[in-house]
Length: 218
Image 1 (tube, rainbow, N blue to C red):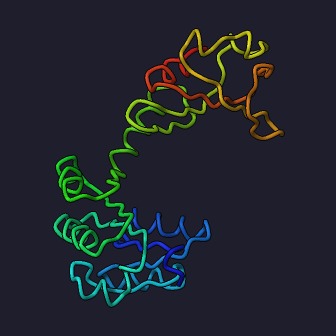
Image 2: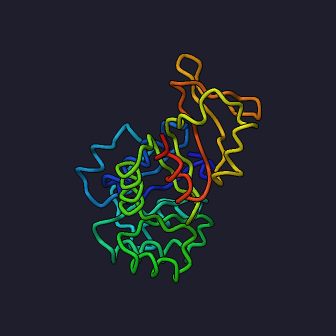
Image 3: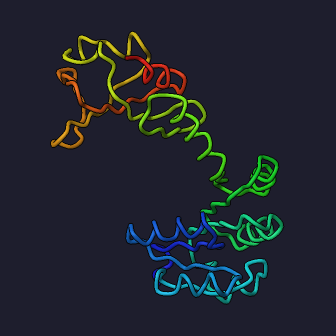
């Protein structure tokens, strides 16, 4: 395994497993580590390498050559103590890029104080995303940072049949129509001359409140 182009995923529960399999699909080699033999066996042949091991022991991490990897994900969710101790050991070993799952805000604060590069809140982030989808007319919602989002939605009537340059969406609503999808034609970038048609789907970007408000327009 070429460590520089590979990722270690520690904890192969629902989140860790999903992440590891997606990385494999993208062509990234994955070393999976979990303390449960049944889980390890279930991932055998699905990941590049998968081993049963205790990630809270420094000697074990060294034996598995974890210090040679540049990216490690701590996906342990059921045992906060093991999660924090594992993250602490990875920092001690000098891993450049560490992603660690947090199950609560206080847990995340501890990881941040330790010096973890990236703290992930899978359940919280997914809950917020689904809440936006349920509340509005959005087909998809991705928040980027604290107050900026990308939204896939149907265009309001006022936008249909008008070149984007004339619609002045950014000036009027504070959002940008970045791309559109036409049935049978796929996704395309927009320009000032783009004319949105009935049946198109648009991708808009802007402040979270503004894109949500715009997606509700009909």
